[in-house]
Amino acid sequence: MKTLELPETKLRRSIGPFQLTLYGLGSMLGSGIYGLIGQAAGLAGNTVWLAFLVAMVAALLTALSYASLGSRYPRAGGAAFVTERAFGMPLLSFVVGLSVVASGLTSIATQSQVFAVNLASVTGMAMLPIWAIAIGFLLVLTGLVLRGIREAMWVNVTCTLIEAAGLLLVIAVGIPYWGSVDLLETPGLPGNDVLIVLVFQGAVLTFFAFIGFEDILNVAEECRDPQRTIPVALVSAMVVGASIYVAVAISAISVVPWQELAEAPGPLTEVMRRAAPAIPVAVFAGITLFAVANTALVNYVTSSRMIYGMARQGLLPAALGKVQSRTQTPYLATLALLVLLLPLAFFGSIAQLASASVLMLLVVFAIVNGALVVLQGRVSEAKGKFEVPRWVPALGTIICLVLISVRLTSSDWQAPALAGTMLVGMLALYAAQTGLAARRT
Image (cartoon, rainbow, N blue to C red; front, side, top):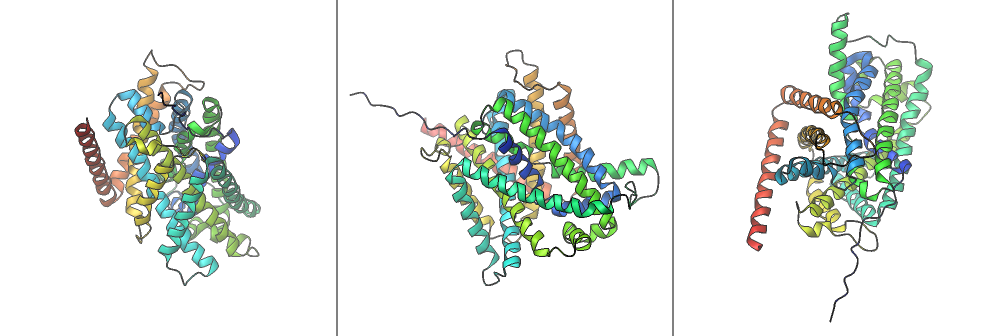
């Protein structure tokens, strides 16, 4: 008797250009800008707006590489897939994929803690421990990701519009102050050489405000017409995000002197307090909650799709590549992330873990840029609908390597050491998985 094989359930293609642009924009705006602008002002002074522009140009090179790769190979787990296609090294692809997942995990865990602290302060939920609120937040997030990509994307759209509105509010209250300060004043002595150095130091820091564009590639299998949608959304998100950053920076330094902005515990909250004292601080704190939740949501969706994509490539157990027939979501990959996230919610601080994963993410960017250089030189590879000159990924690789060297030399030893430990762990996991597969065969 012949058995009837049911058709394989695939991810649902429901994401259009508008949703995908906001998906990338929400990941980039995130919660980082709320504190990052103070640190950047401490380095670059009033030229912090210029530092954001320089950082945008540097990040755009890698973003264009991702857009081109998304046009060529619109698949979930894109970074791991293109690494394997270019270099044919499963171990390297495994490390690249898990590095992206590790970055997502630390971001989600960090945001869950930030969300819990902010929610407790806004609502007065002092009777509940922070870890309990953080775990509750993770459970709600998991339920949303399991519910379906359409629901997750509409929540993302809502959160992105709210967090963008918060930044636009900062811009609006700061516009009357524009022109009141020298936009080229720096912490150092007068001189073009000093200006250039300080701007680039600020750009190295503000570069990380643009990390998030890579999230777009991992939902490629859920996009309508991904070959066109991905490049349009990715570039649009970068340009809109940079425009908001520059305008926020100008407003911030116009309202609050850069020396005080650098020392403020909540830089943008301080801007609002001085420029618009009639607006309650709780309003801006509420907007911050949406920004934090959005960052966590985007990273959760991205990480689950990376695990799904790696499973489909044979880099992780095949079960993690299963899709639930009703919701059309990678449910086992999503639940696996929850198992890893729950212990992280108990940690008081995972700042060093986050720094280590950002360092590994820079390595991923360098490898992905290099992969595009290799694939563009391969005659047998079909071109996509969005192609970039070969010097774009080549220069993107160089910039990422420079940033890696800056991170290694300027930061303390803990983050690089932890990154090395994570790498050793990934290699051990790959060896164990390969050995288990060999014994089964």
